[in-house]
Image 1: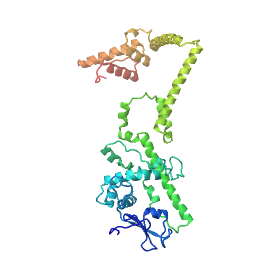
Image 2 (image 1 turned 180 degrees about the horizontal axis):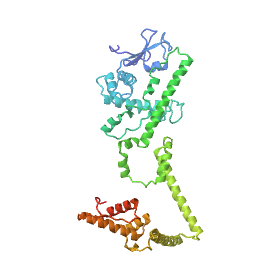
Image 3 (image 1 turned 180 degrees about the vertical axis):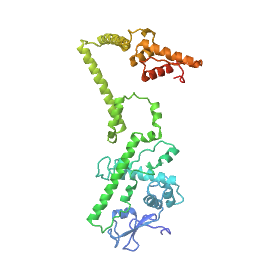
Image 4 (image 1 turned 135 degrees about the vertical axis):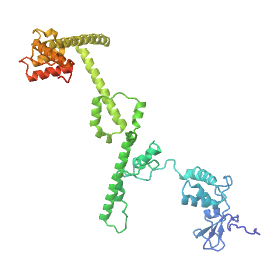
Length: 420
C-alpha cells in the first residue's frame, strides 16, 4: 500500500511528490518528469493532452551539491525579483525571496548559478553584440558618448562652486548657455492623431534642442580644455609659476591673438603643438640661413665656423666702438658750431655754457651781455643797501631782451625774484 501523502507516477510508479505533471483532460493521470519528457501514454491519456505542472516546492534545480539548498520555490521568487527590482538591488530581492535569505546570499547564489554557472555559460555569449544601431555620426552625434558621458568634475573649492553656480555631481551650472533651450520640447507630446506636418514640426523642435545641447557641451569642452575656469578664478597664474615654459616673443603673442578664433576647432594640446612647431620652424630657418651664410663665405666645416664667428664678433665690436667715438666727436663739433657766431668775439671766454646759449639765442655779443649784467647786478645791490639808484641801461637793450636777461639772472641766482 502506498504511503499516505506520497504521489507516484501512473506509468513507472516512481515517487513524484516534489514535481509531477498532471493531465488536464484525463482524471488521475500524473506523470514523472522522465515519463512526461519521453511522451508516455497510458489508457486514454495521449502525449498531446494539456498538462499542469504540480510543484511541491521542495526540490532543488541544481542538485544536492549546490550550496545553500535553494528550493525551486525560492528559485522562482529569485527570478521574479530580478525581473521586478533589477540587477543589483539585492536587499529588495532578499525581502521578496523570504526572510531566510540575506542580500549577500542572494547575490552570491545568482552570480554563481545564473551568470558564472552552466546556465550562464550556455546562455550568455563571450562577446555581447551591440543590438543598438546608432544612425548618427560616430562622434558628436545626439546619441554619441561624447554628449552622454559627463566630464570629470572641476577641482575647485566649495566657495568657488558657489561663486560660479557650479554643481559638481552633475557638471552643470545654475545658468547654462542658452538657458531657455528646454522650452522647445517642454510642451511637446506625441499623439496618435498627429498628421505628418505636426510630426515633422515636432521633429524639427527636437533637432533644434539637440543642436543647442551640442553647442552647450562644446562650450563646456572648450572651457575645460583651455582651463578658462581656473583663469577666471586666478589659479592659472600659480600654475604658470610652477611650470615655467619658454619665453613667448611679442610677435608670437600677436600671432596668437590673430589666430584665437581657431580655439573652437582645435584642442588646447593641438594649438600648443601648432605654435611649438612654428617656433621650431623659425629656429630651423634661422639655422639654414646661417649655414648658407657660412657657405657664401667659403666655410665648409663646423670647426671653421667657430673661428669665423669669433673674427666677425671682433670686427663688429671695433665697428661699434668706432661709431661711438665718431658720434661723440660729432656732438662736440656740433656744440662748437652752435657758438660759431660769437666764439671769436671779445668776452666769449668769460661766459658760462648757459650764458653762451643765451647770447647765441638772443644774437647778443658777449661784451654787451656782460655790460648789461653788470649794470643790473649793481642796481640790485644798491637797492638792497637802501641806496637810491637810477638804472641807465644801454639803448640797444629793448624790453624783450631786458625781460629775457632778467629772467635768466633770476633763475641763475644772481638777483632775487623781488628785484626782477
